[in-house]
Amino acid sequence: MKNFRYLSSSDVYLVLAVWQDVSGVDVLDYRGACKLVKCVEVEVKGWQGKVLREKAEWLYGFLKWLWMEGKKLSDAWRYVTKYVMDMKVEDGVRRVVEEYRRYVRERFGKDVYVDLSNREVIKAAKVIQKVSKEMDLPEYEVIRLQHECWEAITEPLVFERMSDESLVKRRIKVKMEEDRKQGVVVKSVKGSGEDLERLVAKYWRDILSVGVMFYIKKKGWLADIAREYWDKLSNADRVARNELKIQYSVERIIQRWKAEGCPKKLLE
Image (cartoon, rainbow, N blue to C red; front, side, top):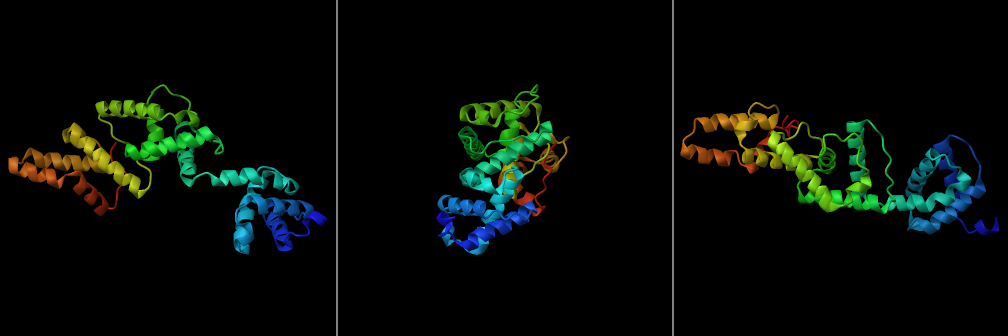
């Protein structure tokens, strides 16, 4: 045990305490804990400067992951590098992958695994992020529209197959053009307030472009606005029509959407 004498005994006992809490088993594997601490000091940046609470939080996350993977404390040191690499994956990449997994669960009823250490996965996630920003669409919608580009699709696209930016955009444009022809905007919307605001702006522009009269028989918040606008247009003279254009501009509709509590059911 002489190679472990320099180690902080508090870190070693902290490992044992956290492992017992995670596994529910009182295993006094002192040597395994020492090997883990020695590895962590090398692999985890700033370990020596972390306070006890920070060390405990990191160890809890790692050891819980280790336990769920069915590994033993004596082998914990072998997996520190992989765990650290996984944790370095950008939060944005991880979020995109979770949106993909959520869509697959909702559409196909499957819980799929995506390897976050795979370079193609990271590339695909960044492509989705970029396209989302450029096309003013939530990441979930970018994923959904690609899948729904073909009516006959029965299996989800492998995540890595969304790494070609030009192909991703082409799939989306095909689906959006088909939706436009069918007068379809969106059935339901899920996402952050910022995402929803972008959707309201985008879909209201689409409605104005296609013509509000084509949406008056649909349901949802935007359909109500379209009916209201159409009713006023039907009885308005030229001057009043110009005023209505301002009243029902994208900016005014966004303001009204916020004032009415940001309804999520936009159009169906």
